[in-house]
Length: 116
Image 1 (cartoon, rainbow, N blue to C red):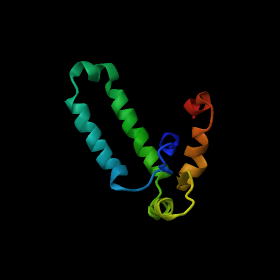
Image 2: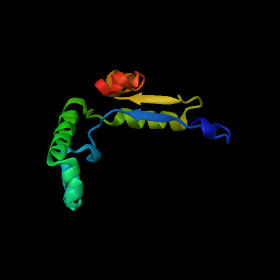
Image 3: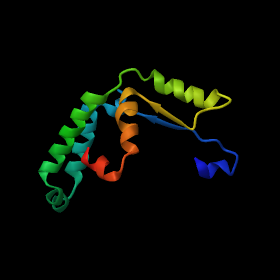
Image 4: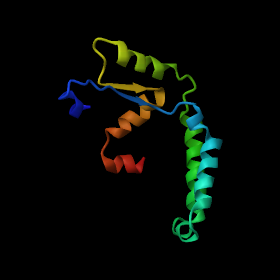
């Protein structure tokens, strides 16, 4: 964002939380991960272990159930504001999960981020 300012380009960062879209469909994500996992060579699978795949899939499934915003219109409204406003914001944090968890988490020390 700051690098582009020298060229007269104003960049706005839109930071959405987790929204219910086809990209966040837990079944589709798991299916895609399985395809990738099944294509891995046996030695790579052994390094990660079968537990890794199962635990990661369970974690993603749980996260999507906890934090998924169903109404995507706030993201679209932020995009519209960023594009059409005379004085757009530098950052747009969209979604309750982003405002209450992800954004504050990103500002915490790494040790606390890793713990959470």
